Length: 256
Image (cartoon, rainbow, N blue to C red):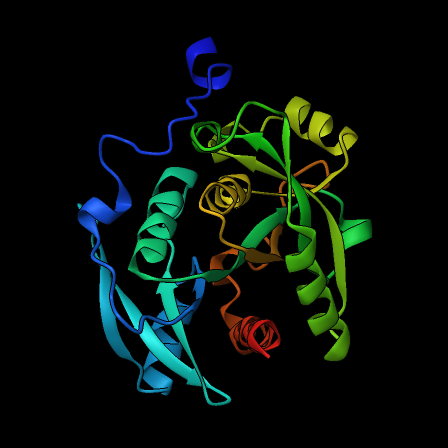
């Protein structure tokens, strides 16, 4: 394991690079929005008659990349696959297509209900309890979010009077190994939420010198003696318009 986590390879070029498999598209949207809910992507694309302009390919199938227009601004919209490795590969290919700024959002598990409540969560840093980020950045327990990108999200949420909280999140590869002892440890570190992609996405963005805005909404809660599913089975669909609006407004604030 020391080879993986303690011996970071600084070579920029890999044996297979994203641009070896993904051709740059002239005029590709500079700002792209992504989430992990297939339903949100499907419904928004259908309701706004969005046209696919590219695809992200894997053995799981092809994921369309849509071109959308919001307030006279062209953007990309695509689904991120669940889990750090698959999510990172998708980001790599979107960047290879020509994206220069990414907005990523999704659901998470709540570790501190008293602090989070029903607020939007802006990750200020993430505990790197996954393997992907260590191939993009040298070993460290945490990775910080880019402060300038966070500032844009904060100003956007304040402007629209949307309650939010900033704080540390825990990125893990193994949802069925979130043991009570580890949950207590992460809470003691200051983590207010848990998810599966944040630290890896931050690492890819930093490695490729691409700014990324991330935000989360609480689904289930791990802050109790028993697991509370809450609206996990809904995956945020009941408030999909709110979450998409936040992402779209962040994109506008970024380009204005």
